[in-house]
Image 1 (spheres, helix red, strand yellow):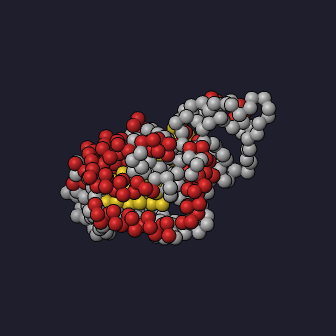
Image 2: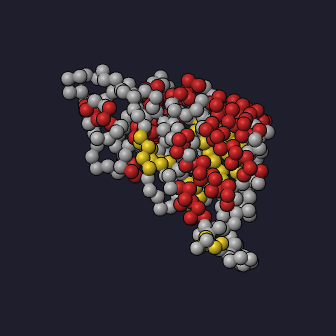
Image 3: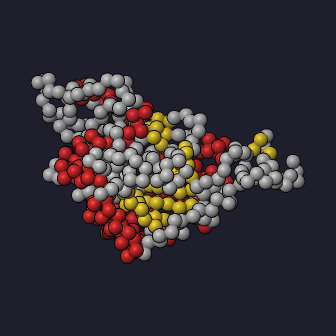
Length: 385
């Protein structure tokens, strides 16, 4: 029997009976089927137990997943990187707004509670990464880590997949940019700081709100805003270039904090800043609406209407160029506020460039180094072949 769902009343597992309240310490309030499933379940009261079932705590399971490749590439014109690596699928932080939730539907699982409780790890990622970087055809570009799910979610504390990936990159002098909302990244300062000294590493810390109550509701298992600011400070003091990602901005929920997030982050040592407007693709629309109705019923309609105002009357607009920032009066005002705040607090407006020239292809065949460098220029033959 599934190690997660055996804890639940059979009525709830079958979708017959909804819980009285969302599961404790989780972001999503339900576990609806993904968009690719042929069958769906709808709850109803059969008259036996009513709607008074308390939702039990859900245990997280982490399943190792074999992988053939670990570097994914994208050509989206509004994404600031060309290749990425994600050590985990799913994320226990449970951020209710996470745009990565719908990706769990490709696994036949729910973007709801499954996404934050059924995690898949890639323990072979460091070895596979070394293989892919060693291919003669590989050309060095900055590798983004954490573009989809957080590389420093709770499972990383024990599994250390992200750390071992960084060790490979440090050895090969390959540039990396990390995005996280966890202070666990401080564990790897012994790797990141020397890389940063060579202009090979940068970090963006995601700070959605400075309100601990709102943070606990939005991001139930993520480190507190205070710990994230502390991470920004310690990264900066260690010489690691660090920026803040004020994301996502949610109308009438956390958007009033934009300036304060930027001011506090700058005072903590952040040198760059970005923001994103909340996106609600696929199943996320219903999950977020459900969460709003449960947590902030008095403003749920207002929040959703403002989101529609920025998305041409819909809750999601997938078009390149507008999907990250939205459009319309509200979106334009938010962008102006961000620009003014960045100038006021002295954020660097220039993009930070990592050094791709240090990387040397280290493909080994029978223990021998390749005789061609990354640009295809012949190397000198080793003295002792």
